[in-house]
Image 1 (tube, each protein chain N blue to C red):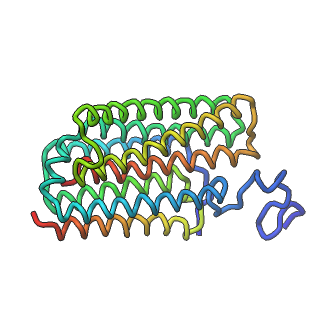
Image 2: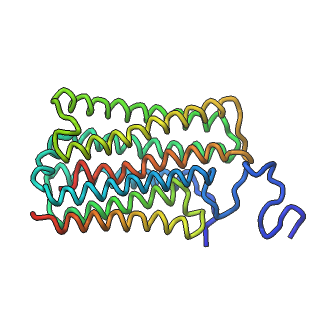
Image 3: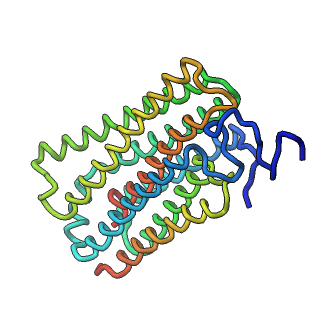
Length: 205
Length: 92
């Protein structure tokens, strides 16, 4: 053991907010509590959807056919790709490359914008058909689940934007990137939840 | 109980490509109009693989304690398992 190491943990990170211990969750633990809470809320809605469908199979199957599977699939690819860009952004900042990190995160942000646009087109299509949450149980779940998720995408984009601005100013370093990891974890959660939502609501019948 | 080896950019790219391929597979099953319990279980299995790839390699949980990976896997087992149960008991 050398002077900068106690029980395998570094003694002198510049402050407690700059480095996590090996084995800890990436980013700020407080955000992970939020992530787990959000996953729980979505999980309850996913299961409620499935059991409500079991009592209204025909209604759900017919209503599901009115959704654009193509839009859902494109949005899945968009979110997966944006998550990959975020991974590359985190890898860049771990090497202290602020500009490169900002570029990758800007790519992710723009893809988030594409997701939002496609989703708004979908919402508008349902609105012009006079379909609302009270139309039937399927649309109640479809609109509430996707709108709830949509709000998370918007929140994720605000978080990404704030990280991009700070990275562009050289605000992170190879020793201080916990803010980037925290925002990245939130964005991956948005992707993780959509990966379950897409097949459940658009595909499985 | 955790892997501290950094993940290379090439490996992340491979994971992304696998996720893209699995998404296309899911979409193709939907477009083919396939339904039934076997298809439902296949789609849930694909979803489980995708969710765990994101959790372990994008969220970097492979570098964390077993507990955190177990929570993410347990989450899918419970949510995915209950979804499967609901679909299996639904009249066809």
